Image (cartoon, rainbow, N blue to C red; front, side, top):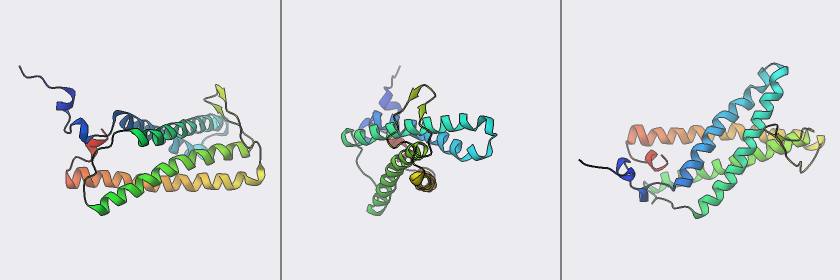
Amino acid sequence: METTSRTDAHPLGPESRHAGTTRILHWMIAALVLATWPLGYVIKFVKSDVSLDFYLLHESFGFLVLWLMLVRVGNKLVARKPAEEGPALERLAASVVHGLLYLFLIVMPVSGFLATNAHGFPLSWFGLVPVWSPIGKSPDIAGTLSAIHSWSAWALLALFALHIGAVLFHHVLRRDRTLYRIL
């Protein structure tokens, strides 16, 4: 009877994959963004008696994304990275898109948190933990922070589309093992 180890069952060996911490953080943040972005978008369409609940979830998930992204930046500095593959132009494009994803996944929650504070609504994380407001109510900058948050959301959506497009290109058209590196 033949036995297989966990690494044998995967199409790539451990040296060809991202570190476990990188993979876990990637998918946790992806799931949170896929929940947070639509929540923020639909707030203006829900009844006013539940809109505060939507705001609470949106802001709480966004604040969690911020902290996980900060952990992810630290992880990126220390975690094992698989060898780069593919043509130089593709590697450059992937690097730029990933860098911009990291940037906007930090700018968006920071600007949203500060905008909420500036509008006079301090964050109570999941309704349980009051979060210190670094700026307090500041109507003069609230609009600017809200605009940064909104534009960041749309930029993030465009980057997400590019990222998914690249995944599909590699997995469906090229049929290479790029996707397996993060699974």
